[in-house]
Amino acid sequence: MGAAELRHAQRLRAQARPPGPAIAHVEDLTVGSAAVGARLYRASAGCRPLVVFLHGGMWTIGDLESHDRACRRLALSTDTAVLSVDFRRAPEHPWPAAVDDCVDAIRWAAAGGVSSAGRAGPIVVMGDSSGGNLATLACLRLRDEGGPLPAAQILVYPNTDLTLSCPSTRSKATGWGLTTDDVAWGAEQWVPDSSRRADPEVSPLYAADLGGLPPTVVVTAEHDPLRDEGDAYAARLAAANVPVRHRCEAGMVHGFLTLDTLSPAAAAAGERVFADVTDMLDHVR
Image 1 (tube, rainbow, N blue to C red):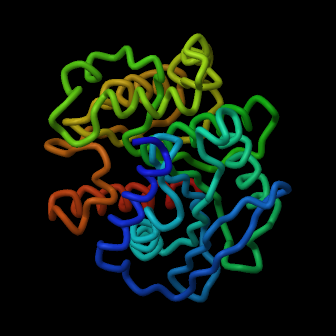
Image 2 (image 1 turned 180 degrees about the vertical axis):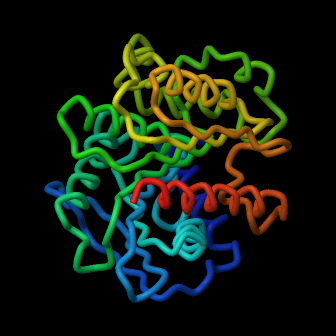
């Protein structure tokens, strides 16, 4: 179908969903030196910790609207300010454009960019699917460049291996919503040179050293082609002495964070992720 048609279909799906819950404050703005688009959500008038949210969508689709409902639920459930980043997408903007934008947004937030608009306390970065990949890559780059690192990273069914070499890419290749072919297509759009897909700057599972990264939550889904690479990344973080909380959601499929209106079980799994965020914030304040 191509990226344009996929984006159009996703917009139609987002419009057909029930609107997200009402929230105290929602504001569109631009952030960082590159003036990247973003949307700020505040659950209450007081200043709160900030979650920098990076949406999924195979690096090619997904936007502020596709994850608007999820970000509202996140802000309300965790009583945080949430900054959703509208980073550049492939194929128009291949790697590393999205990583550049996400790093820029985190640096902007850490420098006080949203202090007057609702932040007080730690900053955490959170991403689902390809957004989880961007969160990992942003943290690795910030670590290597001397920070500022987020206080924690929350990775929900993240892409960590663009070579698609893990067993679940075969055992869960079809029949569970997201297919391995879908993921391969997205990887081709974002990193056209196949020889680069095992590069640690693209696939964090291949990073030589994961030490020094912030405390991490990794949540994977049982029926997901990406399950094993997320599980493996959690294990590698733990081996590098990074504090890790890891859970594989039994019975869940990829994308459950945005399936709450279709499945009570997906809604409950999403609430458990939000509880993970709250608990992590209690430990890093």
